[in-house]
Every structure is written in structure tokens, then in C-alpha cells.
Length: 155
Image (cartoon, rainbow, N blue to C red; front, side, top):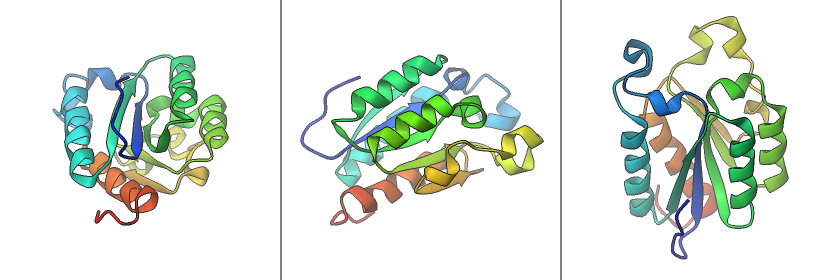
């Protein structure tokens, strides 16, 4: 994780297998890579007056560690927990412990997919849920958070 300036910080958290974006089932997840998405998040964050730090891990505990590390520094989160969306009470508890707003993001429309993807352990505590918009979902999430954490910023 990198240090940001005095701008409000948004942590962008990406879960398992998202490191394979661009090559993993591009007919479902698209051709944008995680590096593309993270770069765009940083660019848009700067435009919105936000600092953006990104973390991806295939390991649940590392994601919890990142949330806890951001706890005293971040103003909010963009969270694509991937498969952990449907299984992780630990991520839910870590996000709740921060008391900070977050937006749940999914590249695909999870409600048009397998039944097990319809249940989220995060949705009811998120300030918003964005699904099915591809990489643009991250942009929508950042704009939404900018309006929450820095209301004087035009999102």
C-alpha cells in the first residue's frame, strides 16, 4: 500500500481471482485487467480529490488485514470481495468494525448468475451495491463515495 496526501483516502479491495482479470473468462468478466481498473480508480480518485490505495488478495485474512490497516486512515472503501461476498463473515465483521461507508461492487450481474451468488454477506451493510456494470462499477462507486466522504467535491 502506498501513502497518500491529505486527500480523503478510499481503499479499493479486490478479492480472490480478480488478479486474473483480462484472461479469466473474458466473455463473463471482460478484457480489462485488474491493473487497468486500479489505474483508472487512481486517476478518477485524483480528479475527485480522493487518495486511492488498492489491495488484491486471494487470501481472506490478508483482506481483513488490509481493512484493519486502513481503519485509522481511510474515509471509505470500494469492495469487490469476489467469491468472499457469498461466504465471508470475517470481511463483514472487519468492514463493520471500521464504521466507514463502503460500496460493494461486482463486475457481473450476480443476480443473473448461479443461485449461490444471489446472497451477499455485505450488501445489507453497504451504502450502495453496484453490479453488472463491468469496470465502470468502480468508477460509479468512487463517485458515490466522494459525495459521502467529501460532500463539497462534485462527483
